Picture 1 (spheres, rainbow, N blue to C red):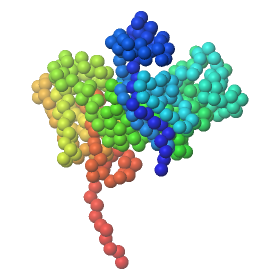
Picture 2: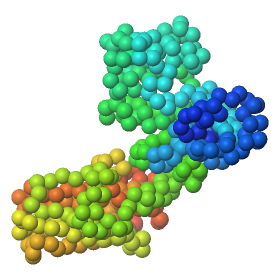
Picture 3: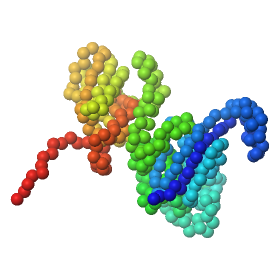
Length: 411
């Protein structure tokens, strides 16, 4: 039975806001700080906030665990506590194997040192001599693909090049536990695929992975278990598929504004939330209402539009996966528009997608194919796996409806 290589028990982390008295409190050494806290509890607790609240979990050897949550939920703070970068205010953490953390691509690097010198310094932080890192240098630079810049100061590197060097160094440290915090968001798509491939190999070799990402597609593909943190506390800890589905639904409710029904409120909300939208104009989608039915796995999409210059249009409802890949769309025949404002409805029964998290895309096209308005909604559609045969998700996101006959006896 796999042993527990990371144990986190009752961990809380309190930070102090501002300067002045907060700085004085930070300067008090242990155990004087505990004594002062007991004598002056109100003064000690003034202007503080809790980044972590009584967090407890364990990670077994060889497992891959992800941590999800909104910005500011405490994910990075938790990784720093596990990595030993900062001490918990309460509770304890125990790590049983050799660990490396990639929490920030520039942690452990100095901008005035060259790439080669920074690799040696990062190796020294993890207990490797200069000679040992020298033997690994060619492998690191080959992975990072920056051989020609190895003797150039890091200050002249782009963010993506710094990420390449940091991840390349990480691959050569021969660690058994890896902590990764959203660093795969930096760099081009090809290098991201290269990093993901290496992480898959690391897991296959029996390595333990604790992973933080906002990319739910990556979370679902790379981890089997997910811990959901909200405002520093653990909301749920369980199988990735179930936790990610509930988390996506909760984020939809968190971000949604049920009062934003007027035209001005909707447009203001779009600007604030950065919704993906473009088109040639002439007709505009003013509102979209999406209703799901678990009984027959149907999806009902109501589109409210305003047409100032268009008399005929084609309406489309499509889907993107968590990585932003287009999966397909349902398109109407050309529709004659009656008046400047109206609505159309699209009902999809059943939704031809396997269990997962998807984002609807609503578009209005001219009959000749010109995109008048295309809107990727910031609203997740979560399909559960009730009744789904295990393993079929490996064939892709589409669930193709078919009629099967047989078996037939053959002589």
